[in-house]
Picture (tube, rainbow, N blue to C red):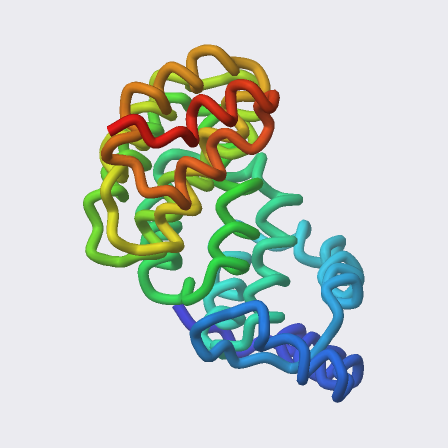
Length: 240
């Protein structure tokens, strides 16, 4: 899908107008990979996305998807943030049949942790809550060769896990990614375990203790971040 629509030019013009040299210079320090960007503060990007949302809501789903894909194709991080903002607000329209489109966006256009998390946390997380059977497809992402697909499998469950949901699936995803060699994937499933620990501290602690000989220290530290000092100390102790 590719969309030639005046709204794209308007958004890009606004992003350029809101860019500044200091933000542009500081932006890259948050990423290890090169990330094309305008240098626009996240708050300004959110305001721009919100300003166009009433018009976006009047469009058919296919048209909205075409707009989103055009923004993604630019490669600029701020345009991907606009997509994330729209999809978070319009997550109610997503259905299981949209998973092929969602999967293709992640595999083709997601190239850093910020665009991955921004899209997956809200839009996909809400889709999973409304259609629990979709979790089976999300779990399949753990086997992808694409690092961002594998991270997406974890971070899509962040908000549901924070509210105590899908604990079994949290552990399934952690099992499948346990020894992943990619640092972004390790941090992703460690973060997922941390959020699950808010409502299921003992279960997550027991999982960590059972798997800590294989679990990378990065993942372990994330997983126990919210736990009390005594549990943290026990989990971090090297007893092998």
